Image 1 (tube, rainbow, N blue to C red):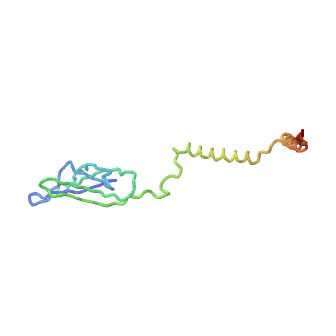
Image 2: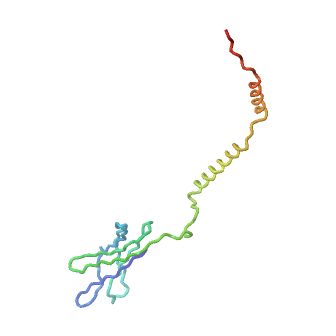
Image 3: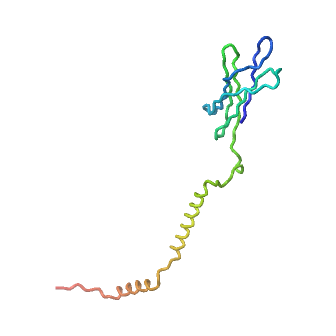
Length: 155
């Protein structure tokens, strides 16, 4: 983001460019996120009545309402307090890629876990006991039912 401000000073019944090296810019949400010194750009026209101060600022990865502020106070001069309120919004939902290339290992891991779970469910649902074992278990159960229970001996 580029922020520019023009400053001038009234001296000898004329406006002159104001020259300083300590003009600061602030980007404020609740607290100042960014505080940067603005640089004076070269004036191409010598008859210009103002000096332009410019700052190339990278905003934080945060959206909301920011206040851009230049609060410049020096003794002997009027105070400069410029505030601009700007709304910063994220990109639209289709303004960024859906699948990040750095996250492909995580996507693969999730897919393998789902496929493994489905394979385990299929094996558990459609797995039948071997026929020989099931007949043996059935035969032993039938044999236990046919055996007479011993009668208690009386004295």
